[in-house]
Amino acid sequence: MSDNNTQTTFKASGVDIRGLHKSYGDNEVLKGIDLEVKPGEVVCLIGPSGSGKSTLLRCVNLLEQPNAGVIHVGGFDATDLDVDLDKMRQKVGMVFQQFNLFPHLTVLQNCTVAQTKVLKRPAAQAKETAQKNLNRVGLGDFGDRYPDQLSGGQQQRVAIARALSMDPTLMLFDEPTSALDPETVGEVLAIMRSLAKGGMTMLVVTHEMSFAKEVADRVIFMDGGVVVEQGPAKEVIGNPQQPRTQDFLKRVLDPTHVEIAE
Ligand SMILES: Nc1ncnc2c1ncn2[C@@H]1O[C@H](COP(=O)(O)OP(=O)(O)O)[C@@H](O)[C@H]1O
Ligand SMILES: [Mg+2]
Image 1 (cartoon, helix red, strand yellow):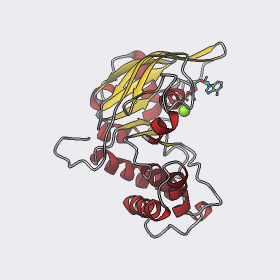
Image 2: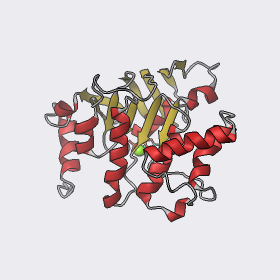
Image 3: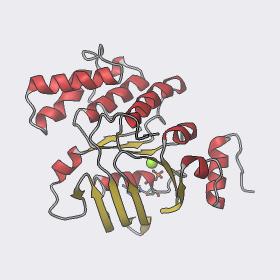
């Protein structure tokens, strides 16, 4: 929970999404989404597979082009045709389920390459920033390793350090622990918890309900391309009002509970 007593470490910006529509051909995936994340707020986005969560995140930094709607992010109007996309994307850190590290680069190089290429930072400064962020994720001594010499949890922590090295004012996470061995999930969630404490604005797609309950200021349940229910975590997860939310949570909280249609 990002309470106001915590000293903030990060410069924060928010996201404001209004009337977002996105279709792939005839398949309307997002059917008019309104969603706000205030600066410093942590919002967890939950919902069944195929409900449009990844598409929504990808629209926020225009990896996907929305068909309609307005998105303000990091002080930019992302849907303005004249927006400086590179500048805007620098403000938005993204961490995916698959870590997408460059396999042929060391951990340190993974964290410096965009700083030097995109931000044009001098090599020494990029290295210093990368080292600071590797320290932050507990991998200060791993700079010379290659990704395949790390566990999945460590690779995901490098991916987080890499994103932080661009000094984002907002972080998007798309199921960052879904591809991990169970024993390494906790170390990644611990890093995310500490970012939240540091005042980072975070929009997190996750199936980790206990994380959402503990860390999220707000939880949003999406199904079929619409926001079905949202509110404080303890209400949406602890006492969901909508039947679709109730069904989903039953399945997620007890994966052995499977109803097979006859
Ligand atoms: N690049 C794409 N091209 C066509 N259809 C897509 C593409 N990406 C996603 N979809 C479709 O959009 C729907 C929502 O997908 P997605 O946003 O990945 O859902 P979620 O992340 O909630 O599982 C799915 O029906 C999926 O098949
Ligand atoms: Mg997804």
